[in-house]
Image (cartoon, rainbow, N blue to C red; front, side, top):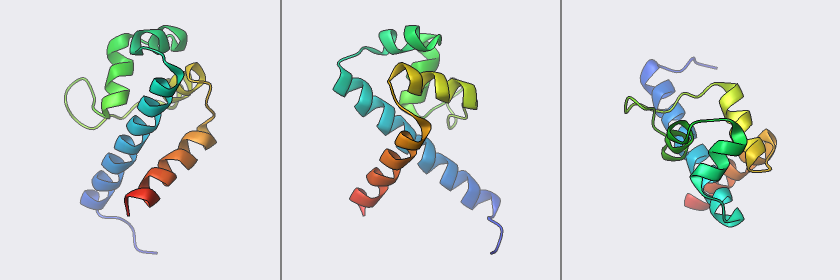
Length: 96
């Protein structure tokens, strides 16, 4: 297997970040929760949670959250990591 180039790695990370953003945004909306409610339950700032939903970092680049941040957000939404990954794969397959 050939290693990814830096550009390919950045592209894949961007796509994964946007898929994660879509998954948590849709789940939050389905639960009828505000960003503030999710952020509070997750122990995150509203700004940090909002950045996750946009797939962007506060500085404007691609989001690169820690695993702890991801798990906190998912827990507040009642989701497991495996569920979020599966939902993100479903978004990719439905867009093809």
